Image (cartoon, rainbow, N blue to C red; front, side, top):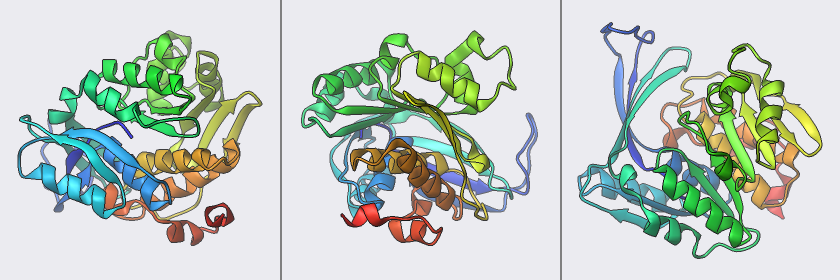
Length: 306
């Protein structure tokens, strides 16, 4: 795992504020976060063997984030402290679980070529490198190319939304985005029709590089496109409280499923279950599910016992 570590400040509110509006919140919580760390913990809780490469600051937040990784079974020896502040995310969560997020990258913005090298130096065939877009793009591009040369699989969660170089997409085995992120990547190819069906978007994404393209649909499940065509994967029904970590749970689970050799559709169903389960508690990492949580949703997890 090569990615970000943040401290998340989560404020529950009676409704999400409009631009220029101040509203009174209800409860402020502080949680370990960052898309990279979230996905590392998600994969580890679901049985993956995970090592994290990233950076934290020299402030009080950094050591706690590293210790939290270790407590969740993640090898955190690749997380280095520095002089910049630890990354932070400010999150508003409404009563229906929907959220608004702003991120201050801090130490995450200081990752460089040496970090990319550290992230791939132990990778080989059968391994998976997972990355997101909360770290510098040159680091992502370098690591993706090096991982592919090593025979490893590359999963890129293109979040936050950002246009991607076609050269990077050619190095990505699995691309995971939500509908808004898909529109940004595809730009004018489908952005002229913001109501384009997710099936059209995922097919267009697959056509520009990745072997598997995935678009997550929140409460509606997800769709993916591979060499066999476009497929919709139905959601799991839960009572949603906070959607903050759902996408990260999805990516972590997808990585575990694919690394274990599951077929794409089975890996997607595993990921859908993890994403749904993650919405049933507050916080990002605090809400990430374990295998027993997915069993309670009725998911067949016999593969995890092999």
